[in-house]
Length: 98
Image 1 (cartoon, helix red, strand yellow):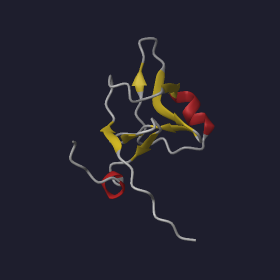
Image 2: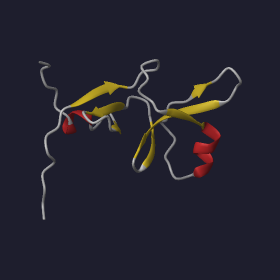
Image 3: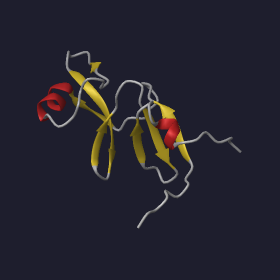
């Protein structure tokens, strides 16, 4: 069976610090040692104690780490997703706000 994604309206925000878009941070050393994620473009933040952490969002499948240039999508029901700049506007089309 083929299906077409139902149209939804979502807030699309380019990730920036101090906007509260992330759900948390994980130590860079833990991200690297888990070995299941490509870390080349992940955002890294150095804390005052010298530790380096990476921001992420939480969803039903776990965590998605935020990379340089990524967008955070927040659906009407509050569900968050991360999408790269290379795909964001092929998946989400800007709409005029009412």
